[in-house]
Length: 106
Image 1 (cartoon, rainbow, N blue to C red):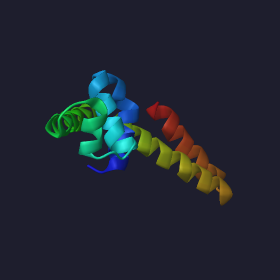
Image 2: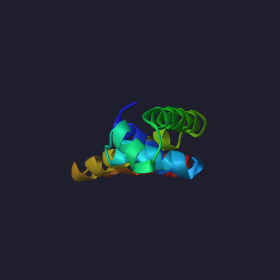
Image 3: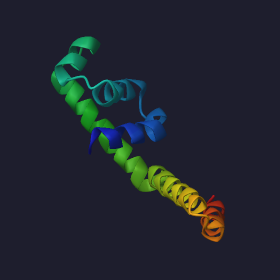
């Protein structure tokens, strides 16, 4: 799982994690800190930091598998971009169809 994906999952599901796990994941993926830096900063071992990262990313993946919020958000964003493109091409009918589909999904 790449850093961008973890950051997106953290945005959606971070509050479901323990405060400590969320903090460790944010340091690793948002602040781009190494395991050694995280361990030193938090006063834990590198192994503890590694384990927390592994558990945390597994939890984030599990939340997404069950709830699909990031997947739905990404699809809605694509639909909105397609509607904007249709409007720029003066294809109002397609834009209306795309937006109607989006509203139905909400």
